[in-house]
Length: 294
Image 1 (cartoon, helix red, strand yellow):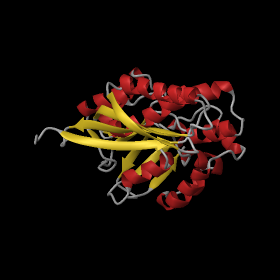
Image 2 (cartoon, one colour; image 1 turned 30 degrees about the horizontal axis):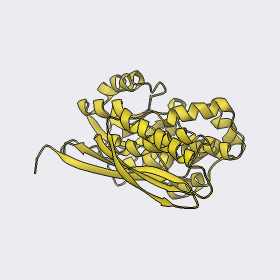
Image 3 (cartoon, one colour; image 1 turned 90 degrees about the vertical axis):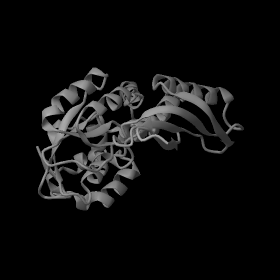
Image 4 (spheres, helix red, strand yellow; image 1 turned 45 degrees about the vertical axis):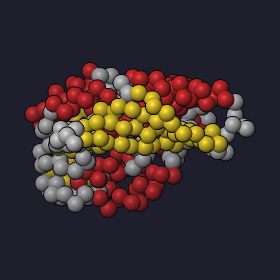
């Protein structure tokens, strides 16, 4: 037993969201590793989880997926120590990741204080773009853009954040930006004021959302969390869909003191997350609610 060391574990896997097997492997691995970084931890080992239709797909597809995952595991400084595979009619891939952390320095999604600034490290809209890809409505440029976004590790910011006064942190995934932001103020003494103009959105997402190209998870997220919004009618329906869009391998939401916010933004930008922005401020009233400003 050690008072300065704890083990954290996470598991995540899903079906392909892009056509390129190598890129899919990278995205799935990056997504799984992100949970460790969101807690302020360091990944140590990873195990592959693979469901593969061996009778329908060539084994070369599997090899490329695993190669993509391994490259991201190596980039994270972790080690692949095995895994498990089963034959399945539907392809799925992901990782089980074990990491380490100081037990007194674990980031959680609760604990933000009034006055803290909220930082978002990656632009949103991957769910909408992935839906467009399935319908052959996304061009090569935007596909390359979201692959780059979804394969960017939260590694360097996640490690360096331990040197700052982080009161809360989470990664943006299936519940969308607003869903995860709601979790940060749920049953807490603070609310959140979001600046709509400062929220980074992937190019072409507004156009696609305006055409009604949104995943089903968007509507479920909206139905579940709409009561958390103090003034939802102040946001147009297209933008509201984007804000509730379920993300894959999204960025971090980080709450820090106003004095440290600019320095933390520079930290993220220096690690390759050029769209990092301060998108809001935690406020004392209304507690448990999100309000919007232009």
